[in-house]
Amino acid sequence: MSKKNARSSVWHFGKPIGLAVLGCFMLLGLSSCDRGAGAQEDAARSFADAVTRNDVAHRDSMIATRTFKEYFDNVFVTRDMIDWFHTFYDYKNRKFYGVPRIDVDRDLTGELAGGALLDTNKIEETGMVRVPSPNAGEQPAVFRMVKQAGLHWKVAMVTRGDAQVQFH
Image 1 (cartoon, rainbow, N blue to C red):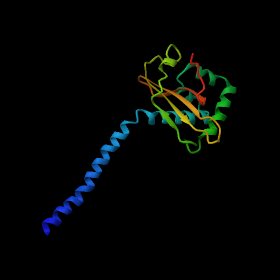
Image 2: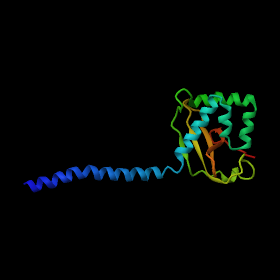
Image 3: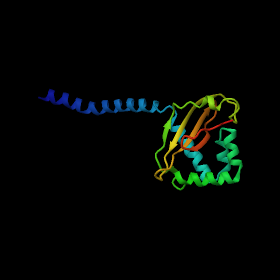
């Protein structure tokens, strides 16, 4: 009987360790599936924070395209953008009102090529972050994101819904 108890106690203590190891492998597998989605969401949140706080230096450092930079050069458009961003971003709690959806498969390389970008570094990745509006019936804010070689994620454009964008 003591042999049986000894075996079961080893099994009893070995089971949690095995489950913990299995859990670690599952976590590593899930985190590798992120493919930059977390970084895109963080960049979109950081940009929204800079816009709502009117932190011009930080905001401008995250703008990737000439066209989007021109939007913020106009004080009236800037004011409208700040007001609009306040509808989907809570600057006091530093978070979006809705849960963002990240589209890492959206390839914007062709649209951004040919002088649209402020920096000439090679495009490594592109994607989109969709932030739903807390107001029913309103279109989501869509952040078009770009990651260039040696740079952090930047924002190429933010639109209401899937509006067509001319980056040139």
